[in-house]
Image 1: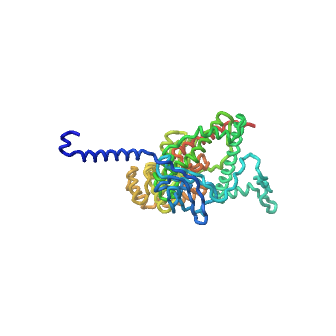
Image 2: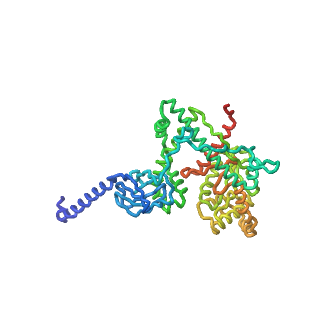
Image 3: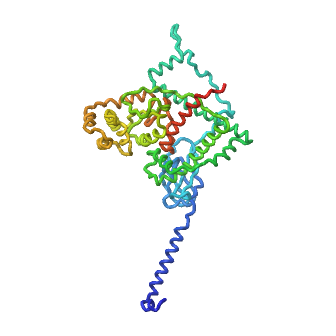
Length: 470
């Protein structure tokens, strides 16, 4: 210590500085020490109290618990035990993914499969011999030419009944045929996949299970954060108000445990189709002939190979997410794709107002500009509807006169009736060359969903053109 410092009695001050510095170093070292990983050991359901008791370690002071991505209310929160409220009567028997998290890092979350209720044993794979004899049909399914009724000397056939059903109640008929197709398609796909895997496994002297255990993990790819956001948005009210940041650990666990392995399996099967044995699902889906209308806004060439008809409501957040990528997807495929918009009002008076406003914009040839402005994330209340025409470059005076005169007041009712004829009940719904598209997987971004539908239809056309083996 310098003589000057001694004269000024610096010793106590230096000592204090040293102590503060040492405390800072200790604090920094403590901050860098990683917390032990969160552990979930078991989860025990109790129907008498409607609770799930979760045992583990290092849950932290504010754990967050989800069951199949639904946040649960905690009744007890200790570092080694949690008790969560679970509405068992509202949950069907099955296996659920339980996730506990305390922060954003991988070590801050853990998941466990939980069985609730009596879960039946898994069904044998399609094509495999059942463990118990399946009940035989007493009467085979009727053919179109089979008699359904006889009146005097007239025989009414099953085909006659189906034609009358189609004519008098087309929406119900289509819904039934689509349901039948979906079941058949699921079973046909499972049988074809099972056969494909069995062939490859036999060629490598493995069981199908061992083959998948060896090949699927190699193809697992971590999904991007955009998939977390898409999955979160698809949950809607199921999040119970939990913010995206709070839900991210549970969303990531779901993707890792459920989605990514399934996608990896699908990728491996697609590889086998290309390199091993061809597998084509040629079951024909029910087709709808969509009636064109001058009120339908259209993008793309009439000669396009893929005709997309989208039934939408500008008030629907799900439709808005899909609509925001239309321009990008159509730009990618150019003249190969044509898009037609049909209204399907689903949210009462607000939807009807938005539908009338869209029709007035279409009358000025500016529907798509109006549509793109309206499809931005925001509530389409009366104030917002009044602001959109200026954003979309419409003649405001003509737009206001159109609404005031009620020129298109009947459009929403006619649109709902038309959608019902096609068996369309939800928005957004898509017909791809007349075939109803499946709803988008919750983790899939909208642009990729549309691209997959288009690619599948283009591939279907290639497959249909091939000569079939006899």
